[in-house]
Length: 192
Image (tube, rainbow, N blue to C red; front, top):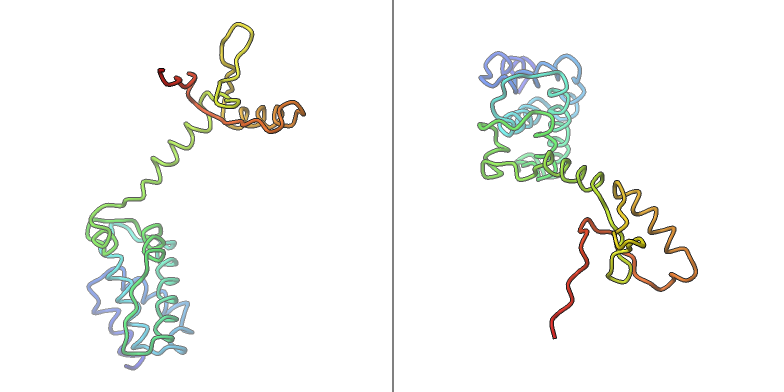
């Protein structure tokens, strides 16, 4: 395939993703064409574009991420040989998802069974709740309480951890087990 044929694929491509990648390579990354040749570059572009699928918008950061994927694909093709295709692994799919969105028509969406099982937003909210909620310290399984019998409470895990480490450093507490908890109740002992 000649460079002229490669530039024609830009005009013929029905994929806006493939067109955007091809344009960027022709303008800024001609080194890929020199190193791998138009045939392999076109194959890598098609692989990435098929993987990404349809997108509503294409930003410059999206194209930059896709170019990185094309480079990785080309590097893999160079190691595998010309006849073998390179499919992105789970890490690469996650990277593409992060840079291109996760549309219902995308290859990544279909490969993950139609759902992104990595609910990062819920994980972040859960972690924030855990870090900032009310925390207590257990000493050998029992909550540490004040003279009135109320458990000492700490605002946030970091504050509870700092207090536990301070107590643990005391000579008379060495060998005792400290544990942080969000449960303000002592564990019930078994019935005899």
